[in-house]
Length: 347
Image (cartoon, rainbow, N blue to C red; front, side, top):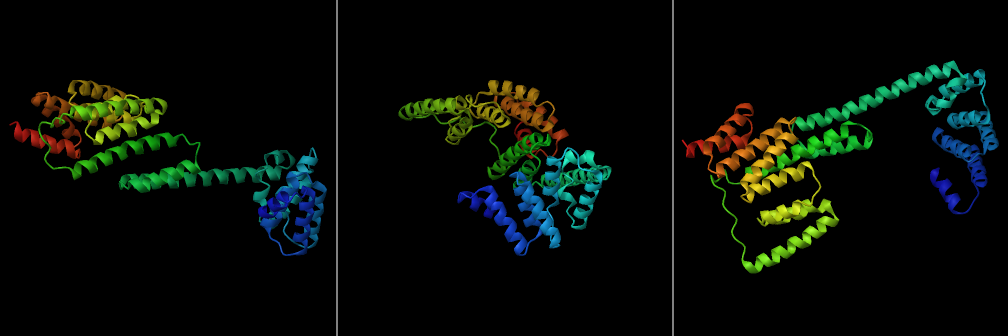
């Protein structure tokens, strides 16, 4: 029906001409509730009230479905008050055709009939219950995927939640929690693919030849300029240097990125990889304070501090920090493995 209306409008027909054509075809041929509802609302929205009431009259004579919603809207618009007896008859007719849902959403009809007001309250209560039920269903699905560590499925469920409930206060928390755990999952996956035995001393990045360093320096400047114009690109540009093991250069670029959970943790990792352990320890302390209410983030920052202390030769203190983590989070696998290795090498 919508296609027919759009087709007529594109052809330059007037709304009145389109309305007449739609009414005639509906009366002469077979029709259904959806079709008459669409025609009724078109006539109502375009102000063709006489034609709408004539349409309703002909439908009633032919014992065909009636557009109750559009009819009631038109009556409410044309009359300051619809008599209670009229409203009750409209409701009775709509109920017989299972079309009460067409008129119950109309708030401006509440004052015309106590019966309508009562039915509308029931209708709104039902909508609220269905809303809460649907919301709980998606949240339960998200919770299940989270418990099963089904990252892709959880991501899709959160996206579905955001589409269905865009104004919910829970969206932000769901996304932030998911992004944090996704990052941890990716890091854990990378660690599992790496060598089982972590070197006690991180290998220093090999010095870059002078002729290449000149090119790298120029590239850093280009990337910084791009990040200045588009701060959101800074993290991707920094990752490029990260994969080339140019950690100081990556730090120079990531400094242009707007603060975020991912940026904060990447900056900490880069400082550790670049051998800037004192700076990394200060960064870790800042993150511990920033995410003080998140135990997992606190442990991750403490783990980074332990690595820095070990690299700085403070072996006993580094081991002590890892022992503290493992005693509270025994499933923190990377901490457990590193502690086992350190204690074996530092009896």
